[in-house]
Amino acid sequence: MDERLQQYDKKMQKSYENLLAEFGSIRAGRANPHVLDRIRVDYYGTPTGLQQVANVSVPEPRMILIQPWEPGMVREIEKAILTSDLGINPTNDGKAIRLVFPELTEERRKELAKDVKKKGEGAKVAVRNIRRDANDALKKLGKSNEVSEDEVKQLEGEVQKLTDKYIADVDKAVEEKTKEILTV
Image (cartoon, rainbow, N blue to C red; front, side, top):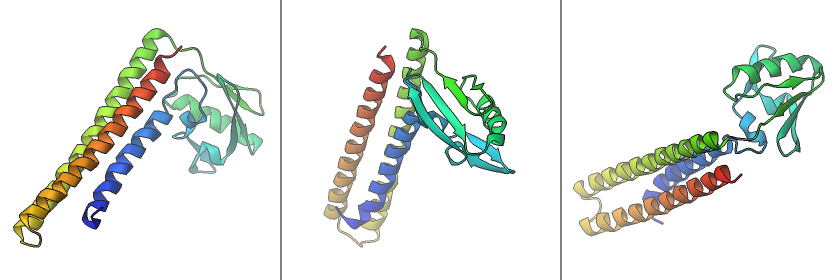
């Protein structure tokens, strides 16, 4: 690959990876510890990631067990989960917190599938914007006579191939996540 295109490849790759990270935080009926990735706990005045103050495990398919390193953190963790957008009430036995995930209703599954498609469209728009930026940069190179018109056309073709590849990856990821959500 032309070194002038590598930066755009990296940007498209980041957009795709960001989409996958967002998909990881969407729960599909099974307990997935990644739904807690964005939760921050007040740890002595500093917002800290939940995984840095507690052990997070999945003892059963629909339950997450959170065991804080310090017993005093149970209340802080519980408060952080309640104020988050998880929509799950934690149960606390004084030493650990349990999150029990209810079965998703058909209606909720369809809502989540729509959300997945919307996030996928957002990722595709990001990839296309990167393509536009790349093509604009290549046109400027052509106008400044640094490269020939033929070379600009060839590079634009390579940019289009990169775009097609990432759009196909996004479509595949959306399809897999939708299938996972709709499977009862």
